[in-house]
Length: 136
Image 1 (spheres, one colour):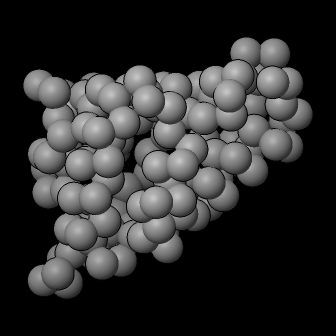
Image 2 (cartoon, rainbow, N blue to C red; image 1 turned 30 degrees about the horizontal axis):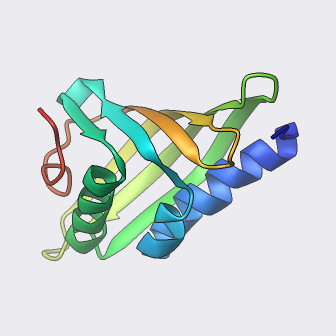
Image 3 (cartoon, rainbow, N blue to C red; image 1 turned 60 degrees about the vertical axis):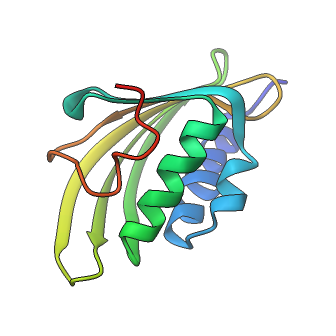
């Protein structure tokens, strides 16, 4: 499937980040390929396959009642179906503790229109909401 630049950007912002903001796990998972891999090298986390990603994202959503991805700056390469998105994120846990980061995600979108690869560069160490589903 050939995607336009605008479609790729909307896909990553609307179908990934904004669905996580809304705690819409089913909506996010509809856009994840069965063999998708998500890596966060700075924290040594890898989630391989849809089941591991579901477990991770379910724990992430449950760990943070407030998730706020915002301030998106994105670039898309329609020929390669790849998108880079820089953003700010604020997470608030059940005890009211807040974490603020400025991160960057790199996405690869498959021919079937689902995410096949997600690489995350986080500006702060991650632990809570990231352990479940980790392959390491």
